[in-house]
Length: 253
Figure 1 (cartoon, rainbow, N blue to C red):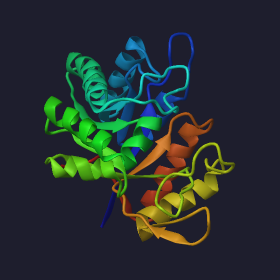
Figure 2: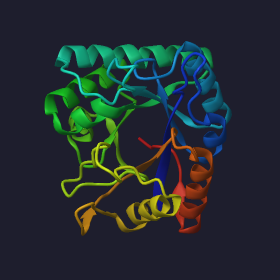
Figure 3: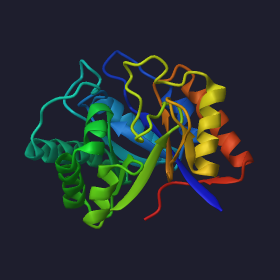
């Protein structure tokens, strides 16, 4: 039996600015990565998104980021391991407060954007994030790019980890995501994105930008909440995976 988690980056509205259709996406996913105010989101949005996730029995995750609201967390910054540890711990704690008040809990942690990509290849940053997660709650699941340094760091200190793949991002031959600065890095066509997700889930491989395929074993697939068609796409993906015999369920320890 193939079992896969569907996660989505949510809670990215800020003040009077609305991003995504969180309410429309929520029924079709099993895990929500909620922005913690560093790249997007604010206290009201965090509170609302936690309550929505609880209503739909969706696992709550802290989507931790570099402190970069202007750049949506997608610009690399020079940060020390101590800063990385502290900013990770800070953001988990903020989301955990809302989860506790709602009578639920944070279940996982996933870095966002540039921090995610930096930690995929920088062992020291990956270790700092993993330590912050463990020191907050050793029962949390750490989510990182499949096969990268981040899940390796989490597993090395005893955390449960989830190897993640992307439904709507192109891959390079080394397993990294195609930089967004390159045309076609984001798969905007829904048919192509669904096909990639099915290939990853059922065949354990993905086509790469330069040609050929790459072995890719993943336990969770990401749906980007900032897609214009995010809710329709999440539903379509959920239905396609189910039709292919894939069981969709949240992370397991």
